Image 1 (cartoon, rainbow, N blue to C red):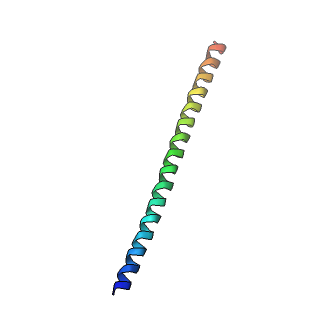
Image 2 (cartoon, rainbow, N blue to C red):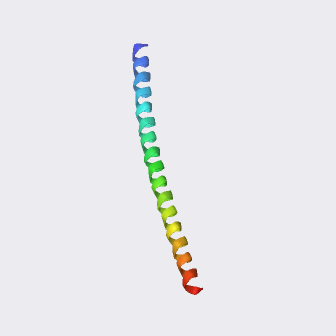
Image 3 (cartoon, helix red, strand yellow):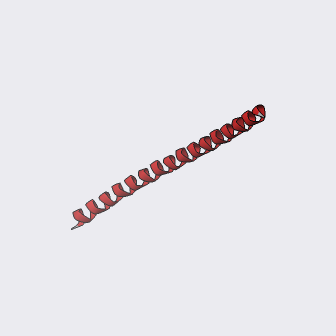
Length: 59
């Protein structure tokens, strides 16, 4: 009985480690997606600015 409970605790510990690693991965993914959003935002701002300049030149 003791062996079974020991194995169960080992398994639960491994699961905790896996869950922790998944959390870290998802956190990294969040950071990456946040950076991407920021870059996309800057790009759209730049393109908007360029369009504005083009319109000024045309008029």
